[in-house]
Image 1 (spheres, rainbow, N blue to C red):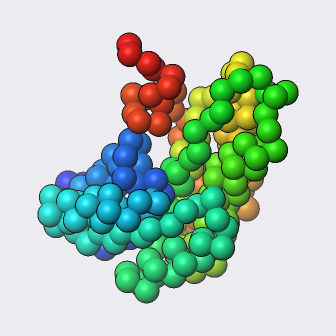
Image 2 (image 1 turned 90 degrees about the vertical axis):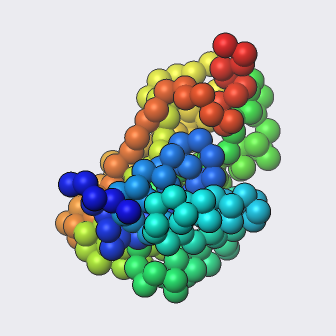
Image 3 (image 1 turned 60 degrees about the vertical axis):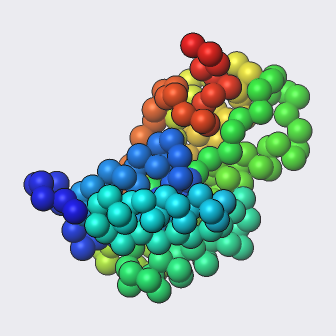
Length: 206
């Protein structure tokens, strides 16, 4: 549990895609600061393992929530599970994302378009809406959208992914203005290529 000046003791954080890469490190950082955390991912076994490991290491409560963010009807259940367990949500980290199909934008299939937009745009917006409706932070919460530097510039052969991340950057700015008066901060973090399982196809064997 945290003993430093940056303390989240008594707060509750929900992190999507929380079992690996940036999501896992976000879970660990929040738990290190004392927050109880909800770890959301698709694989039941891995999600439970991460939650158990976080509880042991940081002496906080960690709730595994198994869900597929590509299915919009699963969003309300995620928020309900967290509120039922902890009674509140203070921090929402929208990290989960679908890997981009590589190739010319003009060749993107309707199926690939729907998948990328569903997971990378619709899901974080739907989850934010549900969390706010559930009283996110009781007027003092925080939403953190993990986007990408690819959303800030044109990336050949990654056009659909770049477009999705650009959409979330724009949505973040809009939500910040709309939710700010209610005391809810909305920010985006746009990392470049980080060596994770998600980016393995980009970094190769370097």
